[in-house]
Each structure stands twice: as structure tokens, then as C-alpha cells.
Length: 319
Ligand SMILES: Nc1nc2c(ncn2[C@@H]2O[C@H](COP(=O)(O)OP(=O)(O)O[C@H]3O[C@H](CO)[C@@H](O)[C@H](O)[C@@H]3O)[C@@H](O)[C@H]2O)c(=O)[nH]1
Image 1 (cartoon, rainbow, N blue to C red):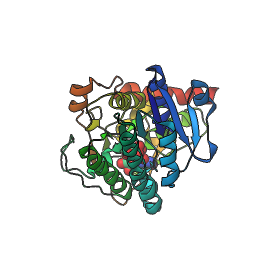
Image 2: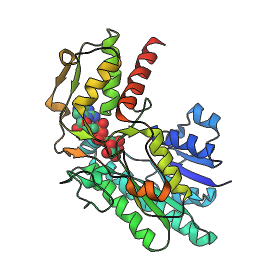
Image 3: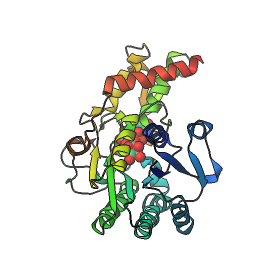
């Protein structure tokens, strides 16, 4: 039974990844900070280890003990907005921790003499305000915020170790969403807000720039892409995206329609407090490479994604 060591396993994508890997017959070990061990994941069979991403020696000891066939690094300070308030911790968690983990994977590979896969959750944000869309694996790396800069370091380091013979891959994830997304991210903020407005529990939704365009996909599909790369033998950089982008306004309109409100305008306001110091106008990815190499294709389109999230938020209010 192949063994995976997954950081960030308790997050949105990590929890879907654990389900996916266990479904494929993997044994999943997860890193847990502060003993956070969700019952659903324990019941699924995830074995938790307490550890701290900022402690390189204990991370290396854990990798050595678990002896995984794949190390998958999803742990991060994942909020671009928060990275402006916490640039140092962003660099530490999203950058330096990658160095500790990938070095540990490399040492394990040398010790056991069999390949160890390393998969890094990279981000569309490494491309910054890209001059053209869609972006692909050859698009210049030019981040525009502390989050993107930290992810760019991790991304480049994966390439460095790949050159030395580690089976190291970077999955360049575009925005991926689900009912498990926290409300600090715009999609869930919108669907949860629309559901509460529909239920009469909230009277308005305050957002930032409604004109930016993002390429939103279904998080379980992105977990599946990560699992395919971890199990595969073709290390590289892989864009994971739907290839279709929409504005925040499109998302708002679709979410309000999904909860049964035809005209969203009376309920939505904008506030500069939610506008970022710098933001890409459009991020849209070309996932041709992972389709060709691993046969990955997204299974859920924009309208379906918004409907699933909005309806789930209505159900949660009714429960
Ligand atoms: N969060 C938030 N974003 C808003 C709001 N109004 C507009 N936005 C805009 O909505 C877009 C999406 O923001 P988020 O949902 O916060 O996600 P993100 O910054 O794009 O980052 C996500 O995707 C990246 C990949 O592209 C990931 O790397 C990152 O971890 C995260 O999952 C951004 O352009 C942001 O400025 C608001 O009220 N809240």
C-alpha cells in the first residue's frame, strides 16, 4: 500500500485529497498543528502526527519515521489578503517550510534508494498580474503580493530539487472552491451571504472589486489532479485550471439566482477595505499539459459549482 505524508490535510483541498488517496488504496499520514484532528478524517483512516511547519528538524524526523512514497505539501498561509498583514509568517510557512520538507524527501530518497514523490501546491498567484491569459507552465513568474512571492520561492525550489533527481512536481493551482471553503475567500463569502440574505438573516453583502476575473474550479477535481501527479512518474510543473474565467460580479449574479433572488444589486455594496493593494485583473489557466500527461479534466463547470455551493449554504441554514 503506497504511503502519502500530507501537510495541510485538514484544509479544504487536503480533506478532499485524503478521501481521494484513500479511495485509490493509499495510506494517508497527516501533519496536525496543535493536535487538530478532525473526527471525519480520523474515521476515514488518516493517521495524524503532531508537528510544526516552522520546525525543520521535527519535519525531517517525521518524514524519516513515516517513510512516505509521496510527500504532498498543501500547508500554507493561503489567504492572499492576509499575506499583506503577515508577510513574515507567509514567507516562513509558504516558503521556508517547502525547503525543509523537500530536503527531507530528498534525504529519504537517498537513504532508501527508491523514488520519493514530492508534490508542492503552487499557485496561479506566482504569475501576478499576467499580461495575457490563459497562463501556462511557461508564463513568466512575476508575483504582485507577498503570498505570490512566497509561493514563487517554493515553486522554484521544486524545480531545483527536480534537477537533482527528486521526483518533484509543482501543481500550479488556480482558485478551487467547494462548500468546505472558509468565508474569508470570496466565493464562500458570496454564497453564504446570499443564502443568509435569502433567509432574512443578513441585509447586505459588502465586497471589494467586482470586475476582477478568476478561473474557479471544483476543489475535489483539484485534489484528484494532485493525487494523479503524486502517483505518477512524470515530475514537472502542471497548471491545474478550468480554462474559463468569470468576474466576481458573474459569481454574485449566479449565487443570488441559485438561492432564488433575481436582482442582486439592492443587496450588494462595495468597500475599498476589501480592495487589495495590488491584484491580478485576470487569472485563467491552460491545463493542456496535465490533460495530456495524466488525463486530468475538470468535471464541474462554473454554473454547477456556484449552484452546489449556494444550495449547500441554504441547506446549512435550514438544518
Ligand atoms: N476574499 C475576498 N476577495 C474579494 C472580495 N471582493 C473581491 N475580491 C477579489 O476576489 C478575488 C479572489 O479572492 P479570494 O477568494 O480571496 O482568493 P484569491 O486571493 O484569488 O486566492 C485563492 O486562489 C489562489 C489561486 O489563484 C490560491 O493560491 C489562494 O491560496 C487562494 O485559494 C481576488 O481578486 C479578490 O481581490 C472580498 O470581499 N473578499
